[in-house]
Image (cartoon, rainbow, N blue to C red; front, side, top):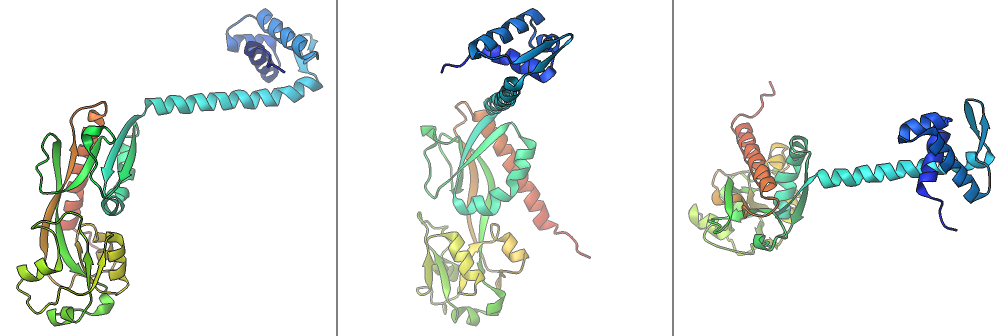
Length: 304
């Protein structure tokens, strides 16, 4: 069976809700006669009476009572769906590529602030250890770790990485002799250079010749290496910035001051495309978060 005309269904739903042709006419911006005509057309199509017409009032029949809630819920669903579509269209989209560990440890905890400040930007995180070609248009911006420069891209430095030996306090490491008798946890880096934080480089820079850097356990994922260190399985050379929570909570400790400086994280984008303004907004926000985090590190809260 084909559906009755939408105008007739709409007129009936409004008249049933108000129990008045006059009020329904005012809502839809037509005459009461037009409402009466549309309701009559619907009744003729269905072959049943939907209203009992009384002086100054219309009352739903049994058939009308069955039809009204179905139409009411249907029109509410229509309105809600249209509102949602309209809101999505009003949002500005931004896709940012970032490596998973950086996303989990630095970016995700701060995203509620970005959403609060920029509710009109729908942010999509593309997490991958592979660098995405920004010229392809797959993503609008990326957070990249490296020496730079990034030719052809707008590049905004965020912060420079620092790597320190980290381990569980339960290992009780206090000296280099302790370290030499402890399992070393290694990270496999996709792209190695003179700034790659490896145990051989750390030992060479700080003149620790006794350390056997060839043994231990290797990990391809930062998260697994950090979890192994927390579990007391060894010492990992890891970011002091991205493990700040684990250090402050006491899950990890840094037994030595000796560290390695790494490269810098940069927020990069092409400066072109439909979402260049959103990429710039995200870059400004990220820069402000870096400033806030550095201020907190220099002035930790006083618990006294």
